[in-house]
Amino acid sequence: MMIWRRSLLRIALTCIIIGLMGNFILYFMGISPFNTVAVSENRSFKSDSINNIVINAAMDDIQIERISGDAITLTRLGSQSVQYSERLALNTSIDNGTLDITVLELKKQRFTINASYDVDLTLSVPDKIFEAITVTTITGDIQLNNIHSINNTLKSETGHVQVNGTDSRLNKIRTVTGDIELDGNTVSLDLNSTTGEIVIKLAELAGDIQANTMTGDITLYVGKPVKAVQTVLHTGTGKIRTDIAGLELSQDSDQFLARSLGEGNLEVQMSSENGDITFHQTK
Image 1: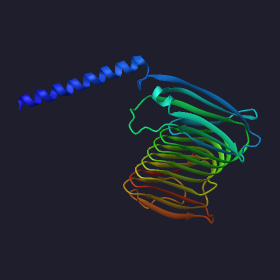
Image 2 (image 1 turned 60 degrees about the horizontal axis):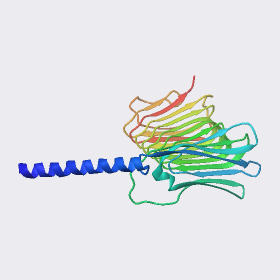
Image 3 (image 1 turned 30 degrees about the vertical axis):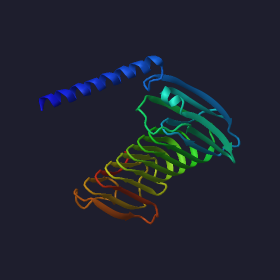
């Protein structure tokens, strides 16, 4: 038995040494997944005819910001493994008023090593109202800063989504493990995360809010007094906290609250299976 163990140990050590030597050779040849190259791309578009923005980039951290001026500018900066430099390419097009930005995967590989990738895609837009903004990524974060739009649809599987100072009618945001943070003048919210936390900060309650998560907490802060709303708050194992007048819990251990205030038809529905639910009036 001891002889077999020693033989297996020698084989394992030999394989590790061969693997390390192979990686060192590839690295010095400049073709290892650990070799990185700089990413620097810039493009500019006239904003007059652009009413919609669609961005699809699997791994880029994406930021859309408002700036002064009339042009829309696109910047990609960062570094990536040489492994990705031969597989990914930036593609842009404008069709029927829609600016489409995609980081295309030119070559798909069945087996790949987890290589370095740190690229920021920043889209700077003028002060105008866009009809729709759609952003989709797998691992990247999404951030919107001071944007005027009618509809926002933001999706990231493992990245965080943050919306700051944005004026919009409808925000549909989806994540799997990423957190959702929203602070702006929005009307209707449709937010969903599997394990991430959801934080909403609003100046006033002006539209329906639906927020759901499995294991994360959900927190809603509203600036102006809430006087008319239909509320449904639910948690499986967490706690419900609210200081809204008229929405007091009958006892601290309550995990379900359904109540209406005033004659308004606005709805607030927040549900978390294992997280806490908080609905507070900001002081």
